[in-house]
Every structure is written in C-alpha cells, then in structure tokens.
Length: 258
Ligand SMILES: O=C1O[C@H](COP(=O)(O)O)[C@@H](O)[C@H](O)[C@H]1O
Image 1: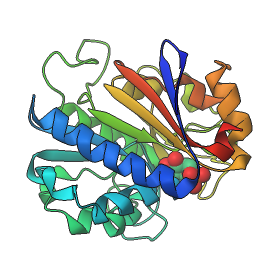
Image 2: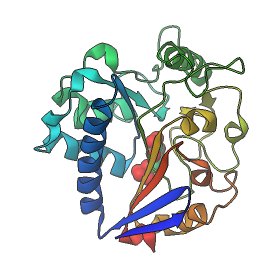
Image 3: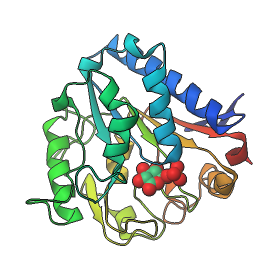
Image 4: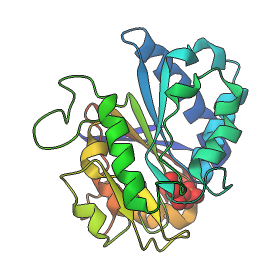
C-alpha cells in the first residue's frame, strides 16, 4: 500500500518488520542499479539500528545483489557510535558483518566515521575528519559546494532509522546538534541512548541527499512516526526534519504506522 502523505513525503506500509526489511533491501538494490545506469560512482549512506541492519542482511542474501556493480559504490554513514574500531556496537562493524564483507566494494570506497583511537580522541575530532572526507568526495557544484561550508557528495540514497524518541542519525530531541547549519558533521556528547558519545551528519548534510529513506518498525515508534509525518518541530521530533532533495520515503511496518 502506498499512501501519498505530503508533497515532500511518501509513506509505504508493510505488514511486518521482516517484510519491511526484505522489500527495502530489494528497493535499495534496484535504486543502486538505476543510479548506476545514469552516473558513476554512486553514493549510499547507511544507518545503524535494528531494522537498518536487517535491511543490509537482506541485501547480502538477495539473489539480485550481484546486479549492482559494487566496485562503483561509495558507502557512507549517517551516524556512528564513538567507540574504538571493531567495537561490536559500532554501526560500521555491524554493517561490515551484515553486508560489506560479502560484496566486492573496494576498501577505499568504504568511508566509516573515524573511530576512537590515535589522533581521534573526541567525537568532534571524528566529525571534523569525516567532514573533510565528505568534502573530498563532493562533486564540484554539489548541493553544499559553496562558500558557506564544506561540501558533501549528493547521496543517491541515504538510509535513516528512527528511535522511539524520534531521533534520526544521532540527532536527538533538544540537542544543540539539531541547530547546526554551518557544518556537515557534528560530535554528540550526551546521547540519551548509549553510548553517549556519537558522531552525526547534520540536517544540511542529510538534506543534500537525493533520496532520504526513513525505515521504521515497531509499535513503540508509532507516536514519533505520526508526529514526524504531521510535520512536528524537528527540535522535538528530529525525524520530521529529514528530507531528501528529490524524494523522502517513509518505509514503515504496520505497527509503526499505528
Ligand atoms: O543508535 C541508533 O539508533 C537509531 C535507531 O535504531 P533502532 O534500533 O531503534 O532502529 C539508528 O537509526 C542509528 O543509526 C543508531 O546509531
């Protein structure tokens, strides 16, 4: 069932979380194949979280998986838990296990948010390094390529999960990071969801994505889903502010749809 909700968003409801993960994986494979028919490389932003990781597992086992030229895909993250490299709680670690170890993405095309260690001592160090990496891969004239700040590649698809408090990436309700418009990546010091230290894309970087897909499952997310789709203040329901340039898809299960 596809429900046109507002001009800026389309909501697609699936009966349960497993179907949601399976169909979103198929949708992602097709989106990457379509993007590769018009340009190269393509850029995809991954999310952590339960359903986001299930989607990657479904891509890994999809019979359509090899229709994608993985050598032409660049992989980024919308947010990261600020922990040492290889920590099982890192979104990067989970994505490698779920998908990236199984497909031939060149190691240089995988762009994790820098982990705690060496010169990277704080989430802000990681954010600054990641902003520089994004800027290196921004196409000239890309969405943020102006004098106001560093550029980002225009993600063909940016996957986002949403927490029960309405957070997306690591932009939490009431956090000052929600107001940042002069940087593409921020350090987060007091996440209410563990671990407290995180790194996140900002709204300007999220909005540079061609397509933003918010993938949500579970009845505990019905409230924030409804609030976000009603256009609640993003300072209270951050998911409300996650919009893509061409399309914003809300891919939800029936429980989250309420
Ligand atoms: O901590 C995080 O949580 C959100 C949502 O996760 P979920 O398990 O409730 O689906 C996720 O989108 C984010 O990337 C992650 O760092």
